[in-house]
Length: 393
Image (spheres, rainbow, N blue to C red):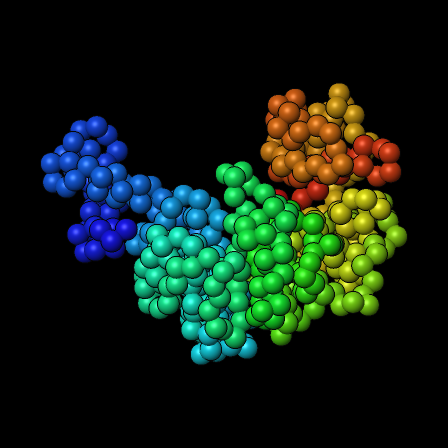
């Protein structure tokens, strides 16, 4: 790690990333004539990790990673969004980032607060310090076991390890630190953000606080438990990069409106995954006067377009009972040649259906395969680009 952070190490990584990759036996042999074999391995490993990290970090080409910590790291956009809540309360004050890993969250929080980056791994603490420096920020690295030693701070961010035995785990009680330790950390700092898996059981969390589900470009990335002064609602869903949110208080009605069957010309809406995972579909539907197509299916319908980052909009072309043998003729009547298939409450896989259809038309469309009651239903629709205020062919 010391060599990778040194000017010679940085220069080797930059050369490998650009014009001199160590990607063949001959190239590796040439590099070994210039530097030690372990340095070749270390530098080339970083180059491969940096390429993967570009999807998460805008300055990945100068950062340091290990594979597991990179996979678990909060991406730059999500981290910046979370850091805004800390900045609103703790500008210039100390925030402890516990189990900091390679520093994804610490970097963002450090833009507005003093950050104490704590991890049991000295290597990862060094990575967090280096990566913060890449962004022109500073974090104070502390090598410590958070079950035994806690720094003084006004608030804390905690990112428990969910791969203790190598496999991905979703429930807080399967993480490290254990759930009892997490509870103790929340009691100690009071004002805490605990990063959780979106797949966690969010209805029975201990300790209690605001649960926020965060999506980025339509993928649910993480859940966060906010406690103390950081909590501002009971439940929240947020879509990035727009930052549009919907929140529920303790007395809000989360039940779904009565269902309505879609008809030709109706608008069909697919809620953002964060809204679905946060169980706020009913609240969102009521806010925009929408109705589900079925009491158990999250697709919503309405008679007017709704512009929201929390909803993807479509317009219904046709509706039919699904019958695989008749589907091709039905779609050909609508001159469909390119089709995107979405399924909910439907057994067959989209790729299997795509192979069977063999369409030859000129139009593009979206095929929703779902259920209304016990009946399999096909809804043919077109995407609506609400920024242009006209249907997208």
